[in-house]
Amino acid sequence: MAILTFVEVSEGKIKKASLEAAAYSSKIAETSGAESVAVVLGEASADEVSSLGKVGVKVVYHAADARFNTFNSKVYSKAIAEAADKASAELVVLSFNQNGKFLGPRIAVRLSAGYIPGASELPVLEGGKLSAKKNVFSGKASATYQIVTAKKVVALTPNSFPIVKGEGTATVEAFSPSVSDADFGVKVKSVDKVTGTIPLTEAEVVVSGGRGLKGPENWWMIEDLAKEMGAATACSRPVADVDWRPHHEHVGQTGITVRPNLYIAVGISGAIQHLAGVNQSKVIVVINNDPEAPFFKAADYGIVGDAFEVMPKLIEEYKKFKAAH
Amino acid sequence: MKILVPITKVPDTTSKIAFADNNTKFNSDGVTFIMNPTDEWYALTRAVELKEANAGSEVVVINVGAADNEQIIRKALAIGADRAVRVDANPTDAFFVASQIAAYAQTENFDLVITGKETIDFNSFQVGGMVAELLDWQAVGLVNKLEVAGTTATLTREIEGGTETVETSLPLVVGATKDLAQARIPNMKGIMGARTKAIQVVPVTAVESRTEITSFTLPEKAKQVKLVSPDNVGELVRLLHEEAKVI
Ligand SMILES: Cc1cc2nc3c(=O)[nH]c(=O)nc-3n(C[C@H](O)[C@H](O)[C@H](O)COP(=O)(O)OP(=O)(O)OC[C@H]3O[C@@H](n4cnc5c(N)ncnc54)[C@H](O)[C@@H]3O)c2cc1C
Ligand SMILES: Nc1ncnc2c1ncn2[C@@H]1O[C@H](COP(=O)(O)O)[C@@H](O)[C@H]1O
Image 1 (cartoon, rainbow over the protein chains, first blue to last red):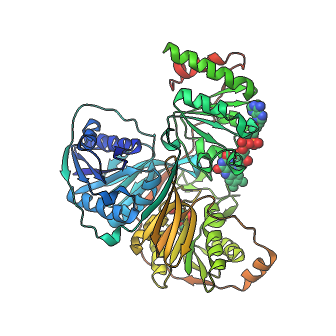
Image 2 (cartoon, protein in one colour; image 1 turned 120 degrees about the horizontal axis):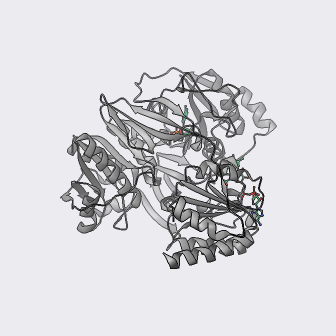
Image 3 (tube, rainbow over the protein chains, first blue to last red; image 1 turned 45 degrees about the vertical axis):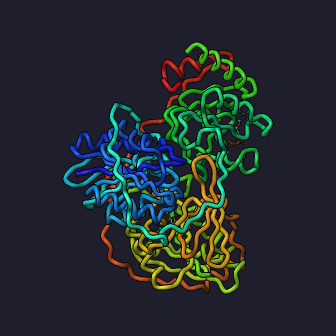
């Protein structure tokens, strides 16, 4: 059997979340004696595509068709389902990222497959069924989902599976899915992206600020530390609501969910709705001048102190650490 | 314009999460249920706004659930939906729910289906995409702006590190996220009017579930925070490097 990973490219580069998905598939393939196959839609260089071999992919179907450079869940779903048939894949894996969230369910319907949205661990395959854990109740619990159909689709939560690179290049096969012009029909008018910074959902370290920072003029503390650490910046909802920060930085129940290795929260109280977006972080550091702030209950490390005093020190100490390592 | 808005009920965000029957079922004892926030604040409210801006439009809400869902359905009618449909069933999985919604959508000519992005209980993000595939429509998820002119929709959606504005044509499935609309509180007139609006109960379309939840687990135990003195910030950096190994 084969396991097919949908690997997303953006401006010709493989997305990190997709590399994680491919590594995850290869690991399942290795333990179940299956072949790890990937499908790439849109233009990318031969080197970029064959580099999937480093995460254990053996064969890549590449539809190097410029029409696929724009994401479109309808046409992508058709093309990926066709690739799954071509590979005789029993399992399709993709990332549970922004595009994957709307694509996964479409692929599952197309393949008459059961679907797990946002698996956070390797699955267990037993008696033709597949089970995997996923977070539920906004991170307050987890649940084991079991797929009972012959074909299966799993979307992997970003930043929950490590990318271990080895040697190897994948064989690249040209792929021209039978889709019609009418299946395309989503045009991108404009993109508003913060350039030069790390996308929040892909960041391994996130530095985040709340109302305790008093105003946008004080955000240099967050930005400077983030820059030193190669981190993304985030904020609490009220901060975005009053336009101190752009809305796409707001994390929490109504914002983005992040899962970095390290989340540093500065001047954020730790309301349950905020925690919902960050409680899957591996390590949480809280800096708050109120020892009773609820965030300390969800933190691994904390400093009870004034952010205006602690942050400049932390930036200095981090610089020293970086220079020494 | 005819707009279908799927709505569902979820435990209030402050609910204590507990499980019953050997950790196989959510324990709803003492839990207050509300309309899923993104369904109410964004999907439904934007649908009502579009209706108000386009004479002759209609907003229909649909819920797949048992009779005790009528409370949230009445609220949706009070916010401004014209009528409601309830598919009388206890949902077994997302495919089951999506199949019911798609089956109903096919009986009328809808231009738009606007779902919430995800429910806050299972965070599963499935129903919208599944409905789109069952109907073979275009779909755009994580949408925070939606304008419709004729049969053209212009939408802004979240992407990694920003937003993207796209254009596509109706019919269309939209997955709503924050800021798509300004949430409304139902007023007295809406609440009174909702009492006389129709809730049509339709029988379930037989579909086999494709997934099941076999067990739930709660996180092991509350974390024990390690406090570092504000006069010794270097210690935090050391701990993050040597102990937590995250830098
Ligand atoms: C349905 C619903 C959904 C919501 N969704 C979200 C969401 O997605 N994301 C989200 O973030 N919120 C959300 N909220 C809001 C949430 O409940 C909180 O109100 C919000 O997270 C508080 O933001 P904050 O911590 O920045 O501000 P505050 O609660 O005002 O906290 C500021 C903190 O800064 C500390 N502080 C003050 N001065 C200093 C200083 N000099 N140094 C250090 N610390 C200092 C204070 O002790 C305090 O703990 C939602 C609310 C509701 C009702
Ligand atoms: N039982 C249901 N009845 C009607 N609509 C639902 C139901 N469950 C989910 N939905 C819709 O689908 C969206 C996404 O839900 P989910 O895929 O379950 O996370 C919700 O925000 C609702 O708009």
